[in-house]
Length: 136
Image 1 (cartoon, one colour):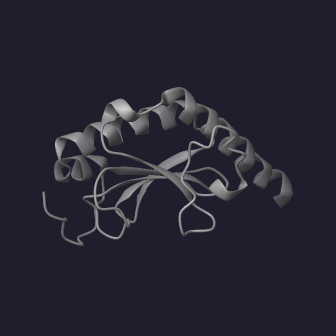
Image 2 (cartoon, helix red, strand yellow):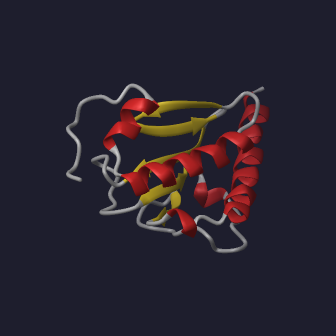
């Protein structure tokens, strides 16, 4: 499938209609894992035409390669907004050229290690809860 036009995607339905099947499946599986771990105050929105999850600040983002400007040629990127602050003791995330966002790219749904992602999400949520304490 060719890259989509830069028109603004306003809903998940719109996004899923544009994605090839494997990217759609990966995106959906990652979304379900994230939504189960997101804190009660957490939210999901479409930002930059992709699913973005935040609480007090950004927590993570899912960027399918079909959507332009993600910097990946194929697969689906799961990026942690403050990945540079996560311990990531299992070295699950890639530390690319961005100093802050650490990520993992999935090319097939069976590559998704739910336990590893949940562990990172719990750490990211704790970090996000800390942002609230510093605001007070």
